[in-house]
Length: 301
Image (cartoon, rainbow, N blue to C red; front, top):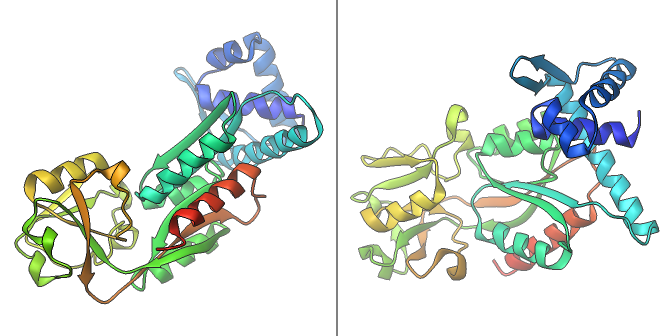
């Protein structure tokens, strides 16, 4: 097994076909196919399932790819440390629920560490997908929360996937509403105050369990519910329909504008917001910097 072979399989997985990957790698397709078959034979696994439409990563191949990405990342770190001109793009991926501080930290990461070439990903996605991304090492870091309601379930899933949760801060419940909402001028709102307004939440797809909800108090019965798959749409509906969503209260006016305000919600409960990482993965320099940047934006929360 060589680093070159690991680079080949990562490229094929991203390209979706051997022909596209071969062009990206400046190789002939037969040479690429042969190199990957040799790797599969050596490791005694099937990394790719071949079809007429291309290739898809097998179940055991997903796990292997996770480790391959880690090996390539560590090799890049060694080159960076000991070679004057290491070359190659820096790569970093994070999967997160919707938090403005995650975006702010990502901006800092790019400005500080991006350099001339980089390939970074910030995935705002569903809770289950965040856990899956980190467990398969598609993302180095995940950001999510747990509370008293979902703590047992979330911690069990993290343990099964060999993941670690490190808390950034604890947040009291708030609501996001538009600045034009009649509640916007209140210093504190109650659940009773919210009854007449539409409740907006982020759709969790096929894993739409209350335990995976991005909003606390997900089991509360409400007469007006709107679920969306796009967070920009959620904010637009907050403004257009005088709706509300329940959140951590952390907001950035530069990112979210003056039209959205956070108001404390008088209700029992709190959100433990933190990062998840893989126990078998070594945190990269980029990962370490990103977590440092996260703490900068959450230390006073």
